[in-house]
Length: 531
Image 1 (spheres, rainbow, N blue to C red):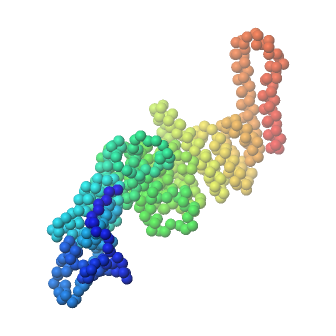
Image 2 (image 1 turned 90 degrees about the horizontal axis):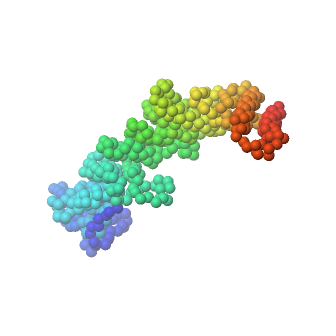
């Protein structure tokens, strides 16, 4: 970050009895009060460069009797307060000062207030500061951002002589091709620093502008979008970074807070969230489903408007196949330690709404089928997590959620089995009838062999389910044996007579009998154990 040094004399300002003064053999002849700070200074160096002080000291109402010195006046409304005034006063005394983007705004506003212009004195402070602004601050990336935020905090859009040039400079640099970026920037993505990088990342600018006030950030985003020079995904990433900086995810923070957020903070967070949602690019894939579901969690927790929630539910439903099971956990506003299952179901319903009309294109149909399978797997994992965490979840509510997915969505029932098994383990008070209702949802034919074998030995399963599992196991075993016999019949003629002589009939009988004997023993043990 660049800075400008003005003056060369050492700093001789000091504090004595709550009064700021300057070491000098000449007695002070002017007292300037700025809020709670009082300055005892000299007229000559100040009036030489400050047009305002010239006017105040020469006004008809000012005393002319020398015995009335020192002259007293108040400057309570000077921009930047006593710190900015002292910087201007040191310039008048030729004391060395350093100006950078951090203190430029209060310095230039105070200098303009004091009328330290060229009409009062050549090479005055306002002219030097404005030259520094044009030649250094606007040429730098971080300098422009710091100066912009500082100007906004002082006077908002009113200080357009600083705000607009800074915004133009920032937008111009964002639109520069990454290969031409030769200035420093902030980039703290996980594991990024550990890798060797030959080029500047495309989203190099997103973290630095996330420090800006919402109105400034929004204006920059809209200006960049209007140029259509950047892909929508980059705009989406900028929104994601800003959200992560200003809106904590309630999935990780809500339960750890001893007290709820004050209403003032919630109002600020609602404003940020609803602005972010309105800025989301409409193009598909411009933001991830994980980001959309994070926004939905925040919206649910801080009590955002129903229209904001509806928009997030609709958009995240379209991309639900990108989500993980943990992404679907949405803390409840009333009790952050529990989850709003209705919000998750609404997202799932939004996803399923896309399948009401079968696409005519085979490739699109295949793609939608894959998305459906992915969602079914993720949703069953979500059910398992909910079953483990929500000990007050009624059986009927769990069944309603499990049945929210159509039968065709689940090509396999392994995930559903594990969700039901987890629910039964965590809810030992479930009645026998409710246990049967839960397990009736499992299609034993859609379980993988290992899962089926595990379920047969599971004490949580009702006897009716065990019988169905054994029936399917026997059916699959019979089918497998038939396939093995058919394979042997087709491959037998290909064997050499030498191989047939070496393998005796007794050995062949043992080879086919051992698998059948093992299956019979496993089934027998499972039934005896269940009985």
